[in-house]
Image 1 (cartoon, helix red, strand yellow):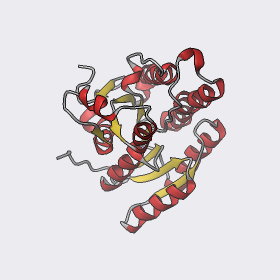
Image 2 (tube, rainbow, N blue to C red; image 1 turned 135 degrees about the vertical axis):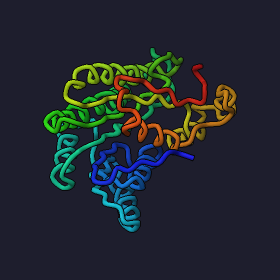
Image 3 (cartoon, one colour; image 1 turned 135 degrees about the horizontal axis):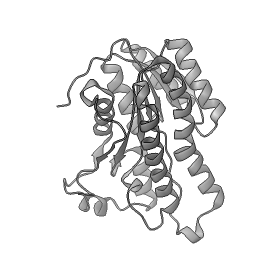
Image 4 (cartoon, helix red, strand yellow; image 1 turned 90 degrees about the vertical axis):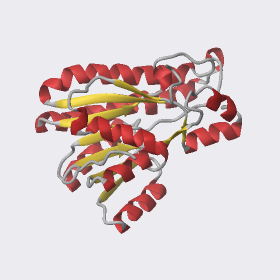
Amino acid sequence: MNPTYDFTGSVALITGAASGMGLAAAKAWAEAGASLALVDLDPAALESIGQELADHGHRALTVACDVSDESQMADAVHRTITDLGRLDFAFNNAGIQIPYAGLADEEFSDVQRLTGVNQFGVWAAMKHELRHMRGQGSGSIVNTSSIGGVMGGPGRAAYHATKHAVIGLTRSAAKEFAPYGIRVNAILPGTIETPMVTDMVRTGALDHDASVAAIPLGRLGRAEEIAAAALWLSSPGASFVTGASLLVDGGQLA
């Protein structure tokens, strides 16, 4: 059983909110009483999720946004503050994969898009979230990295590079903005049951059984378990935690 939190009166912005870990986090924050700004590239999925949350009595602003475009991300943060009145928490979770390929064979266009979403998208989100939180004098940001942020991976060089970058951004921002009462942390998920992982298994980019065998707990993680970690890092229970990289990987890197 997960701990319960009371985030009544607060506002959480979540990128990549239309599916997987972002969607699980949105539902968890809503159940804890927060108003939500749901940011994703898929407007139809966002609209459906926003309506579902509204039907259950939750307040949710939906913003269709390409996080790799700074102007769109700036507008998403601006709309959050304008429509919901404040910004207390951010879960910068949007991320993509590209086809498996050796470093010498990766396509530049693929790597450019990957870096745009996974690295630049986190930078752009943090830039505009932190500008507001700095003036507010409080806030908590959680960024989604990966176990790939602390290890190498054949055929995954560009992806792992972006996830290393997220940890660097997190640590640097944590030190810079601690004096303003802002905490910044990263979650490093292992292999989690999400639509992206399902697609990787379907295309043969990931071997399900081999992945499970590499995890001491003997199963893939669940999106709800990542959401639980994000909420804890944002809660008063983690009030002395900043600059951390929290492994949520079933013991894979133990």
